[in-house]
Image 1 (cartoon, rainbow, N blue to C red):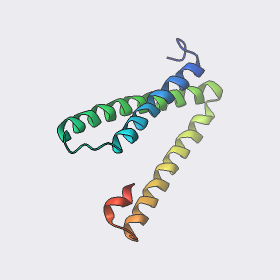
Image 2: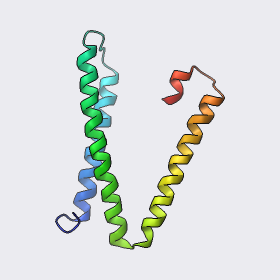
Image 3: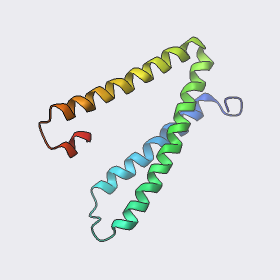
Length: 108
């Protein structure tokens, strides 16, 4: 993949395709969907699928960039990604353990 496309284009495409579904979901959250709940659910599944594919693209572009710079950066990248996942989980668990509001809004 890195031999066919330059790194700048890979990162740009990955960032746009990762951000676009999130912007669409944010816009849809403000709409009144009481009259079309099934269609809204199917639309959100499609947007989520696009987001999942673009997440794979952006992760692979990060890996390509790390290996293009220096192979040792890959280790740092994956350690940082793992620590970020642990930190996010710790925040979510602490929010649920010490609720100040209802449990449903803890995820948002």
